[in-house]
Amino acid sequence: VQVTFVSNEPLPPEFSRTVKFGNVTYNIYSHSFLQFGQNAAFDALRESLVSADHQSSAKSTEKGGVSLDPCTPMGYSHVMAAGSSSPGSFTENKDRLLSNLQPKGNFSECRSAALSLLQKGKEKCAYQHCSIGPTFIPKLQGKFLATENFFYTSKFFGLSQKAFLSDLMGAGKQFCGEDWSSLKKKHKSLSLKDDDLMRYCFSSAYIVALLHDSLGISLDDERIGYGNHVGNIPLDWALGAFILLTSSSQDMQHPSWISTVIGDDSPTLLSLVAIAALFMFAAWSVSKWRKPQLKTIYDLEKGRYIVTRVRRS
Image 1 (tube, rainbow, N blue to C red):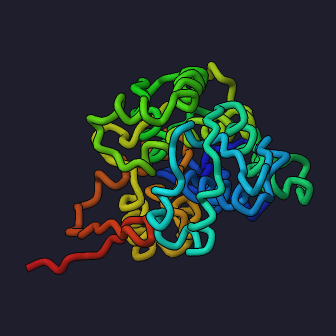
Image 2: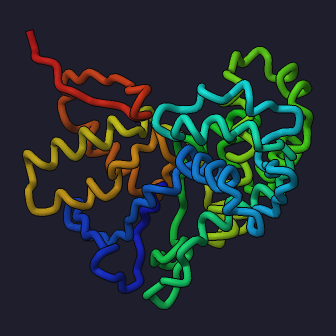
């Protein structure tokens, strides 16, 4: 997860980036929460459930070696998923232990479990206010565009790009509360893998825990939009990599803000939240440049895009 927006508050230097477009200078807050993308957070939650480390915060109880999993719909079998989880996310030993998780399918408890992950380490906060863990985040300002997994989740539930968080919460509650066999029949036309389909319970709860419970965005806030484009410009990791590459060759004074915006936690693997205006500026700038020949490959093992230049013939 990456949070980026223009702020008029004084910012600690480690979170502040200065960006100049024309004659206008912007003071930007930007930080990458590398461990809090949806996929990484979901893996962390399941690991904590497997290790019985998360019982109180996730409201799960362990009886006879079985832990309740509130983020997986009832009827789903972790046994069939063992050995097929994303590469590198679990060790073989923990993969086998997934059979000890008993799906419960409860949105509220899943949201509580997700919030516990987001607040972990908050007692170490060295700033006046920390919204996520021990990390400083100023008061949110401006309109925000939630992309990648945020966008895909809202699209899966059939929500508009201007849907409220309350709409997502309602859809998530219904999804989490349904039986797995019913969900498979209902979404059969999507041809999703079982492991991908069942994640939408956690995904919806996690988005509410992140945007509302942690960042303080109200459930009916109109500042949040969901999308992967600004105009006809796609917003993805490849675009960020291109901006970084171009800036490195043309302007060596301020390349660090872009690397902070995209970071190692690629939006394809982990979710990104960024101010729409900033993306518009970036998209406008890119549209003025002559497009190079680039080759984009999705690395399934690493869960991110790899962009390389293609020699012109």
